[in-house]
Length: 380
Ligand code: XIL
Image 1 (cartoon, rainbow, N blue to C red):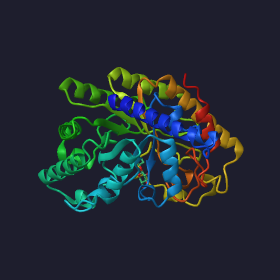
Image 2: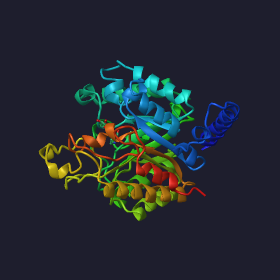
Image 3: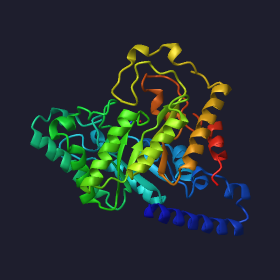
Image 4: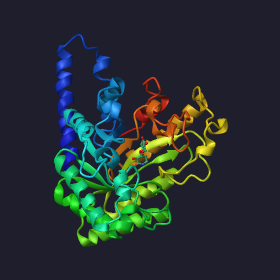
């Protein structure tokens, strides 16, 4: 929270300096100078972030880079810090993209997220093949050591563990659980704290609007607190639809985690406008629905989004942000999972090759009606 205030004061100062400069520089029109942005609109409420892909980080997609820089004050690496990319072979690290990611955040005064240290998906193959439990544990410790030390004081918040619970509230029978036992989550949180005591430490998951799963996370938070183990916040992924979860359900998430004594961040917000395969469970990335590929019923808007649906999306975002502002004292950050519809992961998940429209920017990098509606949400 302290860092948040500092950053906001810094960015306000920066804005004033820019304004002063623009006032004497007659070439800059007033509309350019005072253009609204998401980050200025929600200033003092919560960080507003975007997950960014490798092209944006490496400067190959300048339009996305500009949007991120102008509109957002927090970034998350969509893939670049995941185990399979950063440590593909035992003790062989490739920090190139991750370093540039962190530098981008530092250059632009952003709240920088590390996603994710421990996750069963997008893991390196060698971890699947490591059968010896001691060896497995030392790979995990080495991984966390190398990443957290390297970015100490630079990465502001780590998703320490991602998606460790099942829908019924049981611990997921993941490779980490099998090799390290039921205390592995607390163990890695403790390690992360030791390596960077200042960093915010987050537990991140999907479907937390479902009470059984949420209660399991709340129990974990209580246990950490009773043991004096640091946990700063819970990340609610927020891969949602036009009709689910309800605003009441989202509000309950905010209340419950607030009462449990942790901040809430909405870490992966996007709203799918496409039909879901009925068996779909949350955002588990390994689910396979290839039988629906090419089925026009599952891809109803291949050319453009009908106005009526675009409006539904805009109103849905409006309602969600109204709720976020109402509870901004309990919310640390709201991050969109992507920048433009063009590169959203939801074009390929859960069914490959669809055209989805889940974000605030369209395929030609133009802001959508949903963007304008979000900026209409009153903040005082
Ligand atoms: C997704 C990325 O967006 C895709 O590019 C990748 O192919 C799969 O992972 N939950 C998470 C994110 O925590 O890391 C996932 O990101 C989406 C679901």
